[in-house]
Length: 211
Image (cartoon, rainbow, N blue to C red; front, side, top):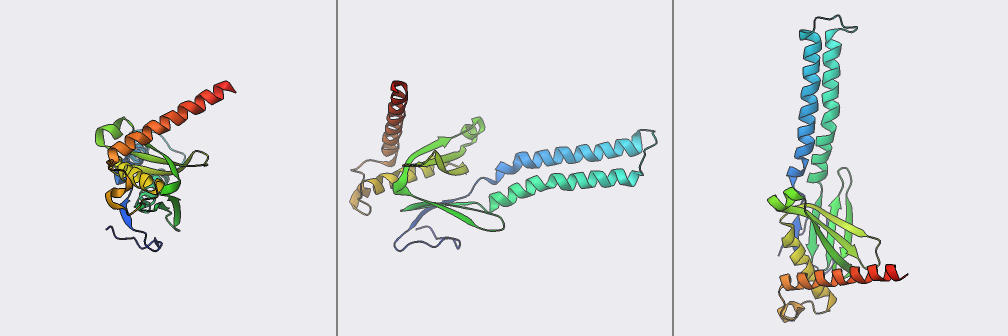
């Protein structure tokens, strides 16, 4: 059994089965951008004050002060990205999916697994290479994606576990021997869910063309 975090108060009998966070490496692009722009600012200040033999309208120290201020301004983006990543948590119980965000205050979103209608896995080229991605959750009667579980390492593991819980909640047999899946393993359940989703999309497309 996974330990419940301090920010979450579970219902009676609710058990945590998985916890996770976004990849910290997601902020690499922000850090690289910060380094590039900072170096550009200091190189420009050096060229203006020490290389070019021109009379500047302001003292050299003002040029360097502008470079420093520009660097501090650029540092806001990677620092904010780091804090947002460190303060984001994902959690799956046998009854609900939770997402906690917020740097200065906590915002907790919850979706019951029995309300989840579709789970979509999105991977970029590098996501396929390094095995990370984002899981999008849609609910019955909802207007599109209700929750995004972003930048997870090994997202397939969570998706398989989540689908098993969805199927378990859907047939109303939670806690019965065999997991209430009729002997089906999570991978088979996931494949069946995918097929059902594609059939639903096809039916909606046909309906739109007939209107």
